[in-house]
Image (cartoon, rainbow, N blue to C red; front, side, top):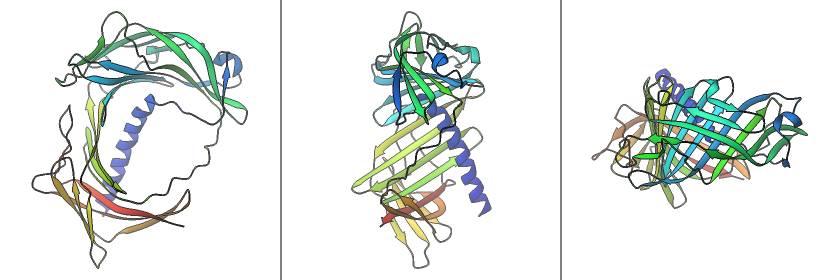
Length: 343
């Protein structure tokens, strides 16, 4: 029992790390947004800049002929980090790298340079983009105070990345300029206390499961959910890379056959689950754990079982285009359950 909860804590810690890397590519959107032609330093002098971020994305064709969405984000606060992601429908891969704070040089007007060397990417790529302001700042306010500002920028300079896979190949160019055609944006966040907006999760009915295996250098998770007539299986993986602090995150989401839950009179349960190929069975180690929470138009109920994961014949697999298919051994942990709402 204690070892099971320890595994859950380790999984949560690893997932939290992944979420931090993925958040580099996101920009917060709040209800109160106003346009301003002023620079961050002039209209928000009372509040210090807590972080600076840059995000760019666009479609590109790789050396293998694959058309992918390519995204780059850079973040600077007390330290600096970069994230490069490539994605196709249903499949996403991102690489995260540490960098010195000097790698992100952006002034209060949004002009500057973001730079990532080949050494800092472990030989996978390089970035040296010059940023030039384009258009007005947009300010997001809370309680009359500006807590973030962003503006579009124009880019020039090289961006190059090598996935080192045959299927996806290389993207960008080592010299000249690479164009991110969809979004190119610089954002500043300020030290302003801003309460989170009131929000309640939507109510839903589903049958879901999640199995995972973790180690000191990697984490693999496969999960599935049936809601209405739709069933999907998702898989994710985090792998440590060189140099120290770098990692790759892989994610796939596909349609799958619906899971089948069987509950015994003593409230122990089994669930048969499916990947894009093969199957597995989850068996509870003890009766379910019930929980309730408020949702947007009622009360959300859930019963959850925890237990062991056993592959069928053939073993459960979730197929990926690059970096190998997703699989779990019989030592993986699994949780599964059903959710529903009441008025």
